[in-house]
Length: 298
Image 1 (cartoon, rainbow, N blue to C red):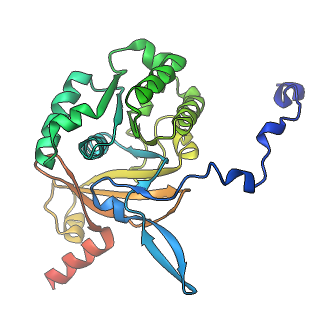
Image 2 (cartoon, one colour):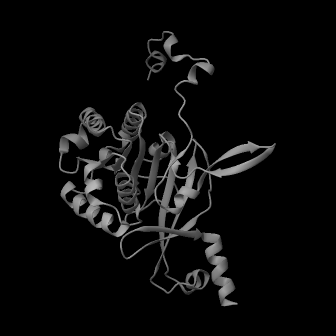
Image 3 (cartoon, rainbow, N blue to C red):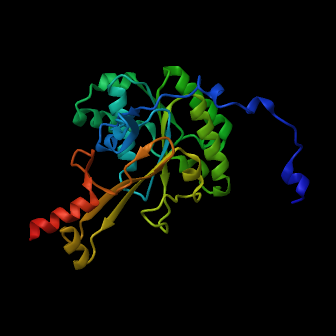
């Protein structure tokens, strides 16, 4: 590629140059949007009180952030997205759930069951949830302009405050070279509409379970405001069984906030369970879990 092709036509664009003071009016407040899980305690902000630095829990994922949840199949990513959606819709906040993989009719059943076990009024959840069914529409999955315009329409229809895309990976299947461009356009649209969002990213089987890399490489992790990694480990050896005090064949599920540029966060790995009712229940730090099991053995 020639140098002129790389540089482009040039020209000063003054409208994109601002003093820091000019940005004050549009700066968002820093507070949390609750998920109803222990994750709400893992984001925090730092305040100075009487000359001392104090850590104050944010109470949820950062307001107006675009967060990426990444993990291998069956690690609980979609369950968490459903739980967060039902929790917010049940509290009266409009949600847009864009399903790229599961047909919308199945989503209805899952949300109804989730509402029941969470003690949420399902009529309220119905009223405050708009579903974009990209799973059954080839054009929505493969025509980015159509997808973004449909997403904007859905957001405006209910004046939505929360958006879930499950999964962003489904928008660039078989065309991963376009992953960065697609994710950037989706990210910019969500920022423009001023919504708090979660994107679900799928890992390939060859990726390490505890890294932010997903299909499309690190395209999502580099662009979004933060990444949460869900992983699972099958207990397959006597040594692992001794360390975690879990029987052979059982599954240890963990999650951690890999990074967030909007606020401070706990970067420790946490153990979580998927209950019989299909709810995500974050228990304790992995280090505390292992130490407690050892102490009980002694």
